[in-house]
Structure formats: C-alpha cells, structure tokens
Image 1 (spheres, rainbow, N blue to C red):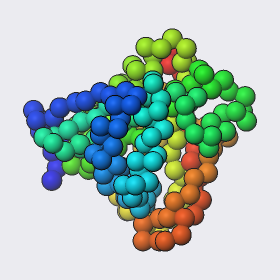
Image 2 (tube, helix red, strand yellow; image 1 turned 180 degrees about the horizontal axis):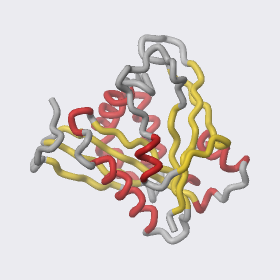
Image 3 (cartoon, rainbow, N blue to C red; image 1 turned 135 degrees about the horizontal axis):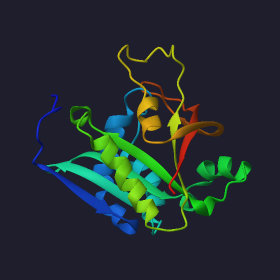
Image 4 (cartoon, helix red, strand yellow; image 1 turned 135 degrees about the vertical axis):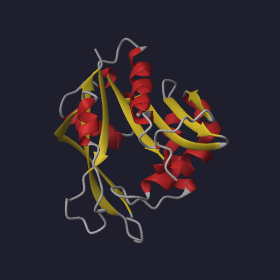
Length: 205
C-alpha cells in the first residue's frame, strides 16, 4: 500500500505530555517494534521492554508525544523530553563535552509506518517537537541520535536511503564527537551487541 499523494481525511493527531504517555504505551510500543525491526536498527523488541523504556517519558513533566492515527491505529509518532530528564547513557556524552544539560531538549523517536511516508509527516513531527521545546524559554539546543551502520552491512537494503539529507535541511548537523553506545540483539539474533549512536544538533534560538 502506498498512500503518497492521497488525501488522508481519516488521520487524527494526538498531543500528550508527562504521565499521559501511559495511556498510549501499548500503541506506541507496537509502533516502535514494527518500525525499528527494519534497517538500520534491526531491533527485536518486546512490549515489556518498550513500556519500561517509555516510563522515562511518563516521569518527565515536560515530555511530549505527537502521534498520528488512521482510525484506531497509531501509524506514526514522535517524542521529546528535556535532556536533564533522560537516562545517564544519553546525558553522559554531553556532560563529557561540558554542555549545560538544562539548555538542551532531546528528541526521541520519530517513527512512521512505510505506507504513510512521503506525505510531509516527517516535517510535521519536527515542527511539533521544536515548537514544544521553544515554549520553554530555557532551551536553546535540540538534539537527537541515530544508529551508525557500515555502508556494507549485510542487511542493508539496496534501495535504502539514509535520512542525513533530510536532517540537514531541517538545520541539524552531525556531531561525531558526541556518541552513546547502546546494546540490543539484531533481528534474528539472541545476543545483544553494542551499537554506536551519534548525535545531531541544532540551535532553537
């Protein structure tokens, strides 16, 4: 199914903050697992782990979710929260580089089912997160991270298009010196292996 170019009158949008995240844990967990199983993440997740991960957002008063639904199905979502509310693994590269955590808003996932790509929702997701962060005067920087995979990775699809150009057009730049290491089992594997996640940043003001 390809919906590019079609009107989507059935789409509805939901904004949630803080503890209200818990009302959509099941929908968001299912969407994350569905999208992240593909390259470049190749992530085999479980609903139980996803809910544990999402608690970080539910505990943050300034966290933000913008989700798109087609009927009753969540087909896309994007999240954000202050970097000061993130986990130590995310904060550490910024502390090591002497950034002020209280000035940075961290953008989490931005995920969309394949059939709904190419409709402008990716830009909408960034617009929504940036607007949410800007309403708090203290945040001057937005950042997110992306997994690094070698160009010759055996599971890289021949038609794979990295999002670097899209992110650059949005005003973000890659900061190779800022990296975190996260581990998870790749699709079809049972043992977790470390993955390098590099950060992208832009000024909000």
